Image (cartoon, rainbow, N blue to C red; front, side, top):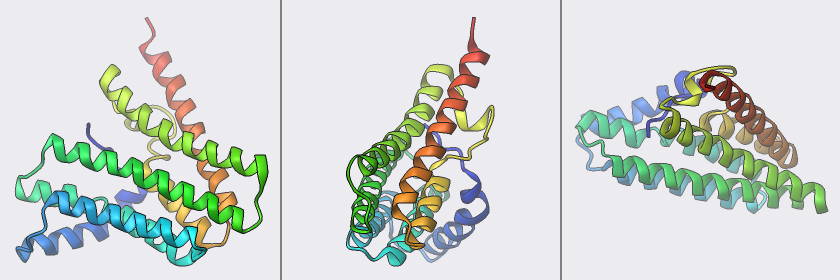
Length: 205
């Protein structure tokens, strides 16, 4: 399953990850694409740990760093002719775990900052389900309809992973973890419903 870059990747992340992967390839540094995948995942784990511990600025910065590093594995693989379906599958699965951990850590931070009870539970569930629905929408759109939903219809790729992580990173670093959950949830579910409606209308018989 191929990825479609969102606006953050196109205009920010790829500019940085391209420099990193270019340096690795040009200097012959023996980092494999799968190792680069685990480096990105480890950065996401560190971000989640910092956020859960209340270090929101550092955690937010590492969330965006993990998003940038997420592009390095594919860039190295393409430059060295090492791209494989297995590597893409590993990257996708670890991305999902990274997202789950970061959102869970954000919910813990929101609790520490005063959010409580059912509103916090709903915010966390809405953010988690929205994040998963975007990924599932993209996977099933390609598998069932032969089209990547991010590349067609309304909202372009405005809720792609790079956008979701940057939104969360900014709000967490600003000391607004509870708002980050609701903002992520709103963006992801609005996007998923808009794309679902569009695809059903265009593919109806």
